[in-house]
Image 1 (cartoon, helix red, strand yellow):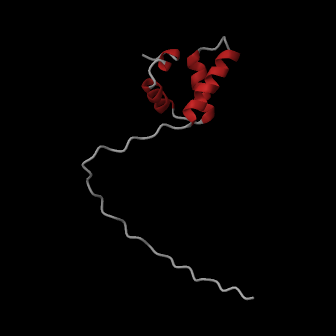
Image 2: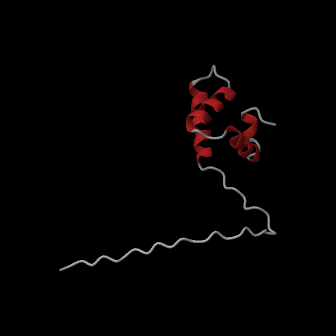
Image 3: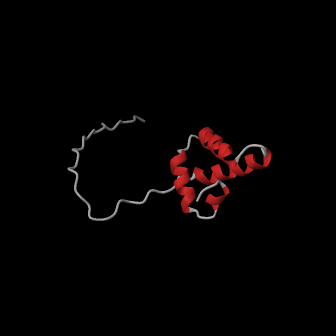
Length: 88
């Protein structure tokens, strides 16, 4: 029984010209790791009572390689949760 290989066809696509869209830009989904980061912060707050929530927040976000600015923006959208970490 012989196997025949199909030839592969490579097609280069031409870039489309940019067109202006009238609608608003698509909303960006929050990173699914934000919930994990909150859980890790809660666990760290229980273990390290002498550390400030701000220090723990920065440490967890740095270890998880998450943007602090984007995380804080997401946290501000969550309302009451922001108050836990000293938000407005």
